[in-house]
Amino acid sequence: MMVKRALLFPGQGSQYVGMGKDLFIKYPIAKETFQEANDAMNVDLTKLMFEGGITELTRTEYAQPAILAVGMAMFRVYKEVVGTDINYMTGHSLGEITALTCAGSIPFASAIRIVHRRGELMREAAAIGGGAMAAVNELGVSEVEAICASVSSIHKGGAEIVVVSNINSEDQVVISGHKGALSEAAERLTKRGAIVIPLQVSAPFHSPLMAPAAVQFAEELSKYTFSPLQYPVISSVTAKLYASSDEIAKVLTEQLTAPVQWVAVLQYLRENGVSEAAELGPRTVLKKLAHHTAGMKVFAFDHGPDAEQLLSESKVAKEEYPLDFIIQCVSIATCTRNRNWDSEAYAKGVITPYRNVQKMLYQLQQSGDQVTWAHMEQAYAMLLSVLKTKQVPEVEQLSRLERLLAEYGLQENFGQRSPIGVLNS
Image (cartoon, rainbow, N blue to C red; front, side, top):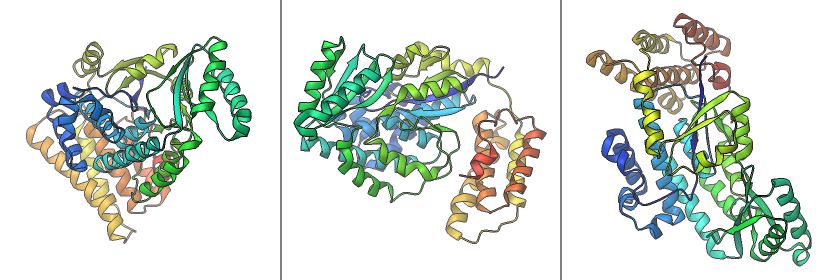
């Protein structure tokens, strides 16, 4: 029976000085990733991550791109070394942007710039003051929500609010709001037996008070075009799969004011058969939050023993895949009639991915290296992009793809990326 796997990406707060340094030393692909991040920001982000200090690294406009860069580096290493199937991706707050980037919808350099701007907007909101956040432990979410609603309805005639902003686990939620309302809610929650821990932030993230920053972030996102998703991604806002990349700007904007539904995300994974997950990013935050999720084992890439177990799959589970499959993908892409005369769209959706796969195929043929699952997925993603961009009728697309997968017995392998779902994106 095939094991279903998910990749989890953490959010802000997981940063620390030295993060990613081992990857940088051991893996050329990680070193390249960090250099891409440096170039995208025009800042020596790598030096800041490796040498600190922690005060500057913790500044939200630096912490967010740094965490994203580590997540992307780990993802590329994971794909290069392990190459096993990935059924779902998801991320906690900022981590959702990392997931969308690893799923191919946001170019890495663009993602670095997006989260840098996101961090600036959050810092500016923090500078305004008047807001606070606190972690609430040992009390159920429904009771916390009820107390927050009660306080918001009476505090200063409703002029101040406090809301649940993160549902992290069965025994931990985070609340955000005006300082006065939050303080009163904390007192009531403590009387009910909760352990309330103020967080060292000065803005109420994931609450309605972030609406001005959300408006500006929406303007920033409007500058970008998002590509079709190459893997299923679950939003931490809706706890549902993205239906298409068209939803990205809207959902990421909502994320600044809406609560993080992490418990619902983990529930979705379990209900859909995921039994293993890898946390890709600094520290082990998401592994700890998943300790109540029965039937799902989470390995944290930043934890030495876990990383060894994840990477050992390359020795015991890696299969040899057929080079002919890649050749067939290239052949179908070449022979398919084009119905799209938009030169810009054609260059992006056909020429670029086709040339990348053609180069990959040539290198494999010359080197004689083993074909990995990452190679297979790149070829298949290219073919999907070409068929869609060339505006091949959907019935014809489905027929071609079904025949191809059936010929190589790969229906189950690509089952989580249904051609219909991709084509409608």
